[in-house]
Image (cartoon, rainbow, N blue to C red; front, top):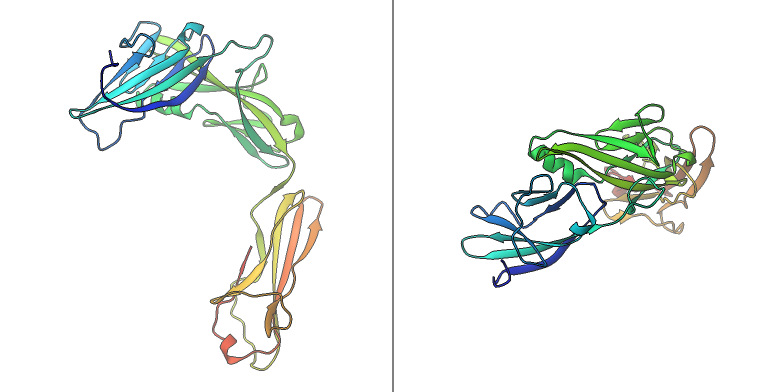
Length: 303
């Protein structure tokens, strides 16, 4: 029992959500690289009794507690205590077991993820912790993706990509509920754990800007004359794009005040449609009269 121990108490740290029949993983996160001599014990928060492995149902493995076949009765708080020769540390995790919704595939709780229309994008399976822990045991596992109730075989616009589902040429039709299921054998029991994702498709996006001018060139000009240099950038994207170009030197930004000898023109923006959608941004750096102080200086642009 742990009630009488004077441990540093980190209270409730995590909530894990599961459904009947799935595998649930609870972890102690108090172990660090500077703690060498320690042991970890799990307890039932209601009875304060130590939890030990039970064939076919409970597997205690160092800092991890696995419930191999979750039932509604497994809901509750689980306490883990890390003890060193000089002190002890307590942490609690809560397991919330929810009934599956009648007539609906996937988990009752869903993570929200965004897909971008018109590009190749991906959904990330939220089971990386479970997979990493199984890998540390040298236990193999496999991932299967579903859209609604239908399995995804990784053909067409879909491709399995490690723990991700890659989707080529995302369209509005790709909106919906996706579920990734991790299957493995642990403690002699074949089990699985799943997470569901509510995927929305956003139509507005911007990609990496493409600089067309200038191009790291060395410019020659004559003192006393005027001079101008254009900055031209294309920003691929769809929808309302917000971006601003500016010129600067070693002293900072140039202003758009035309009463100055050196100034920057107001930015121009031109929308481009067709196969390569996006906007062109243009601004000019103007020297009304070149002076000696303007030479041998790096002039750069920013976005």
